Every structure is written in C-alpha cells, then in structure tokens.
Length: 467
Ligand SMILES: Cc1cc2nc3c(=O)[nH]c(=O)nc-3n(C[C@H](O)[C@H](O)[C@H](O)COP(=O)(O)OP(=O)(O)OC[C@H]3O[C@@H](n4cnc5c(N)ncnc54)[C@H](O)[C@@H]3O)c2cc1C
Ligand SMILES: *[C@@H]1O[C@H](CO)[C@@H](O)[C@H](O)[C@H]1NC(C)=O
Ligand SMILES: *[C@@H]1O[C@H](CO)[C@@H](O)[C@H](O)[C@H]1NC(C)=O
Ligand SMILES: *[C@@H]1O[C@H](CO)[C@@H](O)[C@H](O)[C@H]1NC(C)=O
Ligand SMILES: *[C@@H]1O[C@H](CO)[C@@H](O)[C@H](O)[C@H]1NC(C)=O
Ligand SMILES: *[C@@H]1O[C@H](CO)[C@@H](O)[C@H](O)[C@H]1NC(C)=O
Ligand SMILES: *[C@@H]1O[C@H](CO)[C@@H](O)[C@H](O)[C@H]1NC(C)=O
Image (cartoon, rainbow, N blue to C red):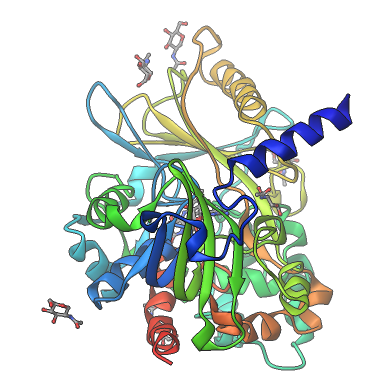
C-alpha cells in the first residue's frame, strides 16, 4: 500500500512539471512568459533579500526575488489589532540609529522613532518552570570588564573573520569564559539578553561576542530606533508594493544549475502558484538560511555540501495573546530560581512583553526541539494561567492567541570542532563560488548589520554579473 502511494505521488509530481520529458533547464521547455531573464535571482525576502532587491532596483539592475511565504519581512512580524488598528511587533523590535538604517526607512517612506525602554514594561521575574516568583533577581548591567573582553576580538564586530588558528578562548563555552576571566555581574546580564535562543549555557564565547557587540551595546544604551507606529513590517509591505512585478511569493526553488564561471550564469527552476518558471540569471543571491535541509533542491557540489552541512539553526517561536489577565505595563520574565546564572529552563516562555495595543502581550518561546503551534500555545497558556493566579489569586480569564510565528532556524551556528577546523574561513570562501552569494544573517545577528553588510557586498556581486 505504502509503495503504491509513493509511486502515485511520484507520478503526479512528474506530470505536474511543465518540463516533463524535457530538460527543465532548457528555455524551450517553457512558454515564453515563464522564462524570466534577469541580472540576479534572489532567494529569500527577509531583511537581507528585501534590502538587496531595493538596492539593485535603485542601481537599475534587474532581479527576481523568490520568497517561500506569502509576505516579505522574514523575522519582522507585526500583528495589527483589527478594532483599533494598533500594532504589535512580535519579531524584530529595534535597530541601531545608523545612516544605513535611516536611509532604508527613508527610501521606503517609513517613519522612525526613538525607542523608549518603558515600552517593554516593568520587569517582573518568575521561574516559569518551577512556578515560583523570584524576588531576589535583578538583571545586572554589562560592565567595563565585558567591554574589555569584547575589544579583544574586533574581527567579530561586523562579521566572523577569524584568525587561523582560531583563538582557543573563543571556543570556550560562555560559562567557561566567565570563570576564566572572572566576569561576575557582566556575565549574568548577558544571559538575560532577550531573543538568545537555545541552551545559552552551551553557547560559545565567539557567538556571545558576535551577537552582543558594540552595535547591541549602543542599542542598549539608548541609540535604538524603531518604526514610529510599532510596525516593523511596514517597510516590507512598501517594498513589496514597489517591486511586486519582480517578486514570486509562495514560491520555492525546485532545481538549480549553476555554472563554474561567471559567463555561464545560473538557472533556477521555481515552483510558483501559477506553475513552474525558469529564471535565467547572471548571479544567484542566497538570502534564506542556507542550511542543508533548505538547499536540497540546489545543485550543491561536494565542497558546498560539506560546508553547508556544518550550519545548524535553533528553534524559536513567538506570538501575540490577549485576554491574559496580566497587567498592562508589566513585563513577565522567565529566570531560573536556582539554575546557574539564573538561566531559564527549557522549553519555556522567555517573556511576556506588553505592547502599545492595551491588553495585547507578545511572547517568545525557547526550546531545543521543533514544536508545533498548538504545543507552544498550550504550554504558553499554562504559564499564563499560573501567572494569573500569582497576580490575582484567580485564574478565571481564558487567554486568546491571536497570532503566531515559527522563527526557526534562528542563530545559524557551527560546532566548536567545525569552527576550529576553519568553518568560517571556508564559508567566507564560498562567496561567489559558482555564481552564488550568501547575504543573510550567517555572520552577524542584527538587522542593522545585515543591511550594512549587504550594502558593502553588493558592488562585488554586481561586478561579478558584469564579467
Ligand atoms: C524573535 C526575534 C527578534 C529579533 N529582534 C531583533 C531586533 O530587535 N533587532 C535586530 O536587529 N534583529 C532582531 N532579530 C534578528 C533578525 O531576525 C535578523 O537580523 C534578520 O531577520 C536576518 O535577516 P535575514 O534576511 O537573514 O533572515 P530572515 O529575516 O529570517 O529572512 C529569511 C527569508 O527567507 C525566506 N525563506 C526561507 N527559506 C526559503 C526558501 N527555501 N525559499 C525561499 N525563501 C525562503 C523566509 O521566509 C524569510 O522571508 C530578531 C530575530 C528574532 C527571531
Ligand atoms: C537609472 O535609470 C534612470 C532612468 O533611466 C536614471 O535616471 C538613473 O540615473 C539611473 N540610475 C543609475 C544608478 O544608473
Ligand atoms: C532566590 O529566590 C529563590 C526563589 O524565590 C530561591 O530558591 C533562591 O534560593 C534565592 N536565592 C538567593 C541567593 O537568595
Ligand atoms: C482579543 O483579540 C481578538 C483579535 O484582535 C479580538 O477579536 C478580541 O475581541 C480580543 N479580546 C479581548 C478580550 O480584548
Ligand atoms: C482578576 O480577576 C478578576 C475576576 O476573575 C478578573 O475580572 C480580572 O481581569 C483579573 N485581573 C487580573 C489582573 O488578573
Ligand atoms: C532545518 O533545520 C532547522 C534546524 O537546524 C530548522 O529550524 C528548520 O525548520 C529546518 N528547515 C526545513 C526546511 O526543514
Ligand atoms: C558597516 O560595515 C563597515 C565594514 O565592515 C564597518 O566598518 C562599519 O562600522 C559598519 N557600520 C555599521 C553601522 O554597522
């Protein structure tokens, strides 16, 4: 029975392909309107891909942007309260106030405002796993001892350009690093950095410094800006309106053929809601997470296969909930009552954060394993119910989950041994290999830096298309 079904499914997908019995990379296998000739094919329409697309448009370069979901923006996610039109950003929150960020917002006619830390609410600490209120915790501040350590590694600031051999200190776990350099309070506050996914006690010092770099420190110290209407998706809605004719939404790559020299270009077969299309382009820009499980359809050579196999992503989820019984103006943060450095146990809610829409909170959820929406929401509901009791002595109100996002894979990282064996040197070395460029958040975490790096890389990518 299983075999019959598998055969039937296989036959169906062959029949559905317009290239049946013909070469799927041959233009003559497609009707004229399904062959798209462009300078660039961009895969992934999050922060990096959208920035690249708008920048290329402004340089009079042609492109097609392929995005697997029905929207642009990636980790920027916004819920809009239908009754009042008030927005809740529950993915990307803040940017560093830099010319690159301001120029991009201005370019898309999108308003910016200074961030006011009161927006995240008054912090209240609980151990959501052990179900106890934690009154004796306060988040320390990163001290000069941390900054002195950070400044030892300027090559982690705008990317990951490691010396060879890789300094052994960077491959210590963060707790090992803390002990070796006696970092005290600084150490504990770094663990409390929001949106730090996975088991932070296992995080390598390299990733702590790369993430909590001077850009993040400046954001923490008041140089953060955000969309004036708490709508970090507005940028992407406006970008889409402008480049709509060159964006394929709900589309995914089913095969690629990339040449070994610039002249041979790239061919990308894309499955779209209106059938298969062939993109014939000069260069391929990968702005999606280039994990092996996401590049199966690409014609990877042995070298690419080996390097991309070393990238791992972490699981992270988030959503918006109302009717919580939680108090507006308060944030509810998960810490470990008795764990090392008060790191919260997994899996669990990271924090509930109030929003500009009264009654609506957004939450983030950290786990070591893939979870479904209903698993995340059910666990989150249990935590809310317990909190209601803590706050009010009753748990009568029923939370209403109004939006959800799977942010996985988040924080793309390699293992200690792969890094020691030159992962980052090899990954940087893949830039331009077989007419393919990697511009997403592999070498920096924050959006401000993803945009800056994309801007810096574009001249080289454009030059490659002119060879
Ligand atoms: C909860 C959360 C909060 C964050 N807060 C901040 C913040 O406050 N400030 C900040 O600077 N950064 C923040 N970040 C980091 C931010 O996510 C990154 O800086 C930024 O999103 C990276 O951009 P990207 O384009 O590399 O990836 P993404 O934004 O993730 O975009 C990748 C895109 O590729 C698409 N895609 C994936 N697979 C395929 C495929 N096979 N084919 C086609 N398309 C595909 C995805 O749908 C997505 O649109 C946060 C991240 C998370 C998860
Ligand atoms: C792009 O083309 C427009 C219209 O032809 C022209 O005005 C503009 O200067 C060009 N921009 C660049 C960067 O070449
Ligand atoms: C802090 O409070 C928690 C729970 O309230 C308790 O278990 C823990 O022992 C306390 N720690 C200190 C150092 O007082
Ligand atoms: C919760 O949000 C939903 C969706 O916006 C809305 O329909 C509902 O009325 C809200 N409930 C409360 C109690 O505000
Ligand atoms: C407290 O409980 C009452 C009665 O169930 C409820 O109406 C109210 O919303 C609750 N408030 C909070 C802050 O939990
Ligand atoms: C690939 O694996 C990562 C975990 O490393 C996961 O987050 C992601 O959802 C997976 N992607 C696909 C397309 O299966
Ligand atoms: C942008 O990138 C350049 C080159 O890496 C770097 O010197 C500069 O500091 C970066 N600027 C910002 C705001 O990130």
